[in-house]
Image (cartoon, rainbow, N blue to C red; front, side, top):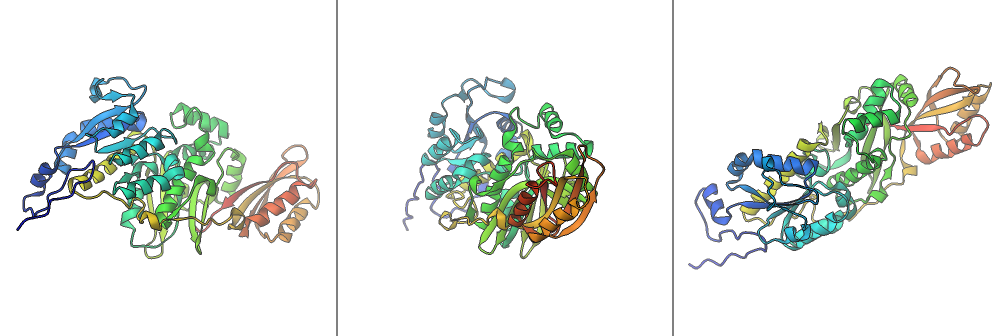
Length: 466
């Protein structure tokens, strides 16, 4: 009997067409002698990837049956480093040529940012290369285009390092919990902000001082705006929502607030009410629409997320069948993120060596079934609130404020009135019951226009039931 000739896929080794009873390591070695990697960007995470490929080379080869070979590194400022095995021959500034080379199997993109990362990833896919990236900003903005390009060619896009550092949250959502229906995904996904809030909470530091301390420790960039304004967290929430709900979000659809307006006073007053402040990414399924918002949130002291401090991340998944599960660990840094990159490389390498067509369903759904998200307006979101007013120290003011809140459907759960705040004002702290956000904003705008308060009222959302 004549067996049909095996079809080949550009950029992939052809698998054997006839039955083969040899052991897996013998069979693998007839398909490929190695899996060759191109690395784009050799900064903190890229450097960690190079170290792991070098120090654990024998272990990786044992697990795969063939070695992982670093075939080229594109980085404009990188210099040869003999301790890492980075020779001048290995380093190039021509990223476009590197990703198109015939001898490259997997392209690892760690440049970050939108461009040239997007163009290079699409070029790599067009040349039949699987891709691994930690670039949440690129995927949040251009994921639909990139995942569709990969699916058309039967190629893989691994992005475990894009959310949660070394926490394998992408695999959990895409694979381990695929049998459940998710109701919500939420958590702390930015270590820089969590470190700053930890310093403010534990030391009573002002925001600017806590930020400076994080910069000195190397936890915050010289320009930290993408972190402290909440944008990094929003990028990650887009990916979590895609995996949890099968919808494509863009950052513009996510209501995003950072931590720059939080004061030590608000953190102290919130503590007196029984709450801890955290920057949360929150996505909830809501009758065909989803909630998607990033902002400072007050959590009860006994909530597990309230105890996640410093640079650690933690992500909850709420499923109908399983209930809530928590995943926590180091959310950033050289080795946590590098291990996530290596995990994607190993998974894709196994697919290639087995003659598979890669992981076309990078989000756990066929690309054609991933729909655009219908996002619930923030004005319709219902929660409890912490309020702070710098109120005139006069009879009747507290009652007048309460009256406006009540007229807008907001009932008060508790009140704390502090000592004199200067200029004949006193801080008045309130915790409300649940109300739609549009009601609160309408009431606060009315109160701000009166003579009862000397400053813009402050409010922070409270999540009692996450």
